[in-house]
Image (cartoon, rainbow, N blue to C red; front, side):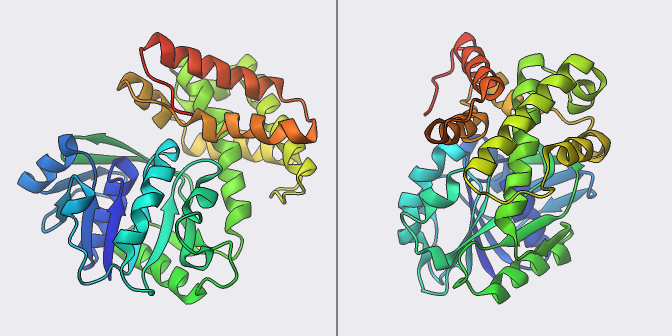
Length: 319
């Protein structure tokens, strides 16, 4: 397959690098500070899934540098949530043929809605990612993995066989992956995980396992989750597990222990002077809560405090 990775940061570099080792024709579109090194020396992948040096990748640091023929089979959108609208505006010019499809490998809520403003919903798939990676120029290190990458589409018109094909390609390349018919349920589970952990890890500058060890932090995480479940119930959004108590138990007994050493990418963003994705996570829950009258004081507090930390670091907040 011919694949464009739009937003070749940590996650995008892992996806593109492994797919290239699997024999696919991959183009990485991203920032020069990273991709100039990839162009010169290849992409180094280290960590959990072995040591690899990937050469032969096509590299672009501006959309106009992307070779658009032959048409891409897939455009994998891996940009930050606050960049989704900008990326969506570029997609019609990058997709090429009607058979070109999009899959978003992103955090948070609202990305699908932004992408489908520019691309027909029956051409847009979503992926749930629960692996973590750290990025340095020319090198990406896979640090943790809690579960398989899941690929699926909300729109029933999307060709399911293509989602199965993409998941199989990821699996064959060395990234644990499978297709799912319930991607929105799975993405909401990831939102719960990120809302409980990312903001607090950023504020306390602690890995996830340290949050689990401290009872005050456990209470904060529990409050975030309980509020999220009340918001979802008010909007008649299906969650799995169905009860907040069951999700808290899952988070505390399996999900956090599996990623105990990981520090949130949100903290990495702050340290690098970049805006965070807090508005697509806890901030999104605050926005969803308002029209249905559900109080979400803990999610609102986490959102405000992360924005305060951004301002202390001199970061311009993107809404």
